[in-house]
Image (cartoon, rainbow, N blue to C red):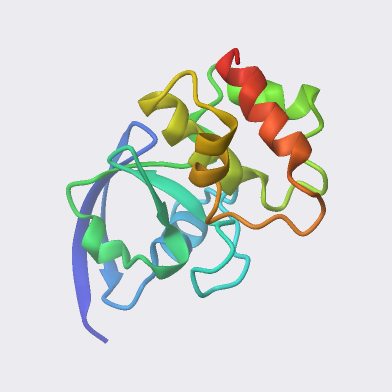
Length: 154
């Protein structure tokens, strides 16, 4: 089994690890780094539960090889809280009941975080577009959209 030396920054911490060439970023984050907030939903890039930010852009960790992330800055849901306090977006999901069962929430929040960094005051259509790659099996998305709107101040 061939291995690759991966150098990347995850949530503000530098990591250098030898990983098998076929190791998915999702498995590296969960199994090697213990960052279990990123969820494995479909295992095929269809549900968005594994969404993380790579250099600020939303990416699906279940279809991204860890070796392709060398030199990248990776952010997981764990990066958003500071000193044990939820971010504004996380707090909005909590207050507006956007979490439901919570399984899809990390991916939803990371996709929304990317949007809000680019556009702090998005329209509902822009929010829906940004979250279009993320599936929720519990809701009709109303509370999720309201959560993102509350965080944006819309």
